[in-house]
Image (tube, rainbow, N blue to C red; front, side):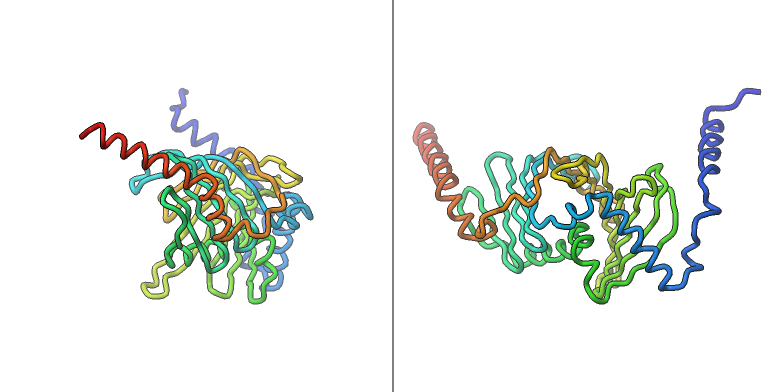
Length: 288
């Protein structure tokens, strides 16, 4: 008897899934709250150990570079941008974008500035508020610092198959009612994906931001995902390809400041901007 390809594929998938030891997995609904929290914290400990243990937890600064792919509202690829990203955790960040010149965005707590061809200016309050929310959602801040905050609720979410990997789900809810769902590979104990679920206070609409992690490589003793794909409510919004990362490089004290951007502009940006303006004026004269 001939088996149709589709039927054969379903048979193979069913056979593989039947080998997953689901009957041995703990049912999260049968665990007492303290048992569920203990199970979740055990998995988180395995995750941080896999990421580098004390080397991962001791990271306070990072210096990474790579390429960012951006997507439009219809999911189409808009283009690529090379970048360098610097962090001093938990709430200082600087990103240098290289595309037809340099644009630098710097955030320092509740302040933010941008450098472009016109000089250095304040970032809008909404951009700063978005950054502050980002620091609350950042998975590295979560694993290194926020898990120790009072009022965090931990829950074991059960076993599942995600991206063809057997994972354990861990759920963490913070005092502001953000829910973090982390899928942790049962074999490697590395992150497969994270889901951050928030609710709009005025509309009560829920939003889910998903990050998918792959290609973990050791860098300065820390297992680093070189590819991260971002999704919001089912729509792809970004894809990051890291080329390299350095940890705890020792940035100057004023690196994440407005003064540092103004110094950079005076050394490089201002000169280039004046040269471009001069060329534009010369072209205008030629055209006239």
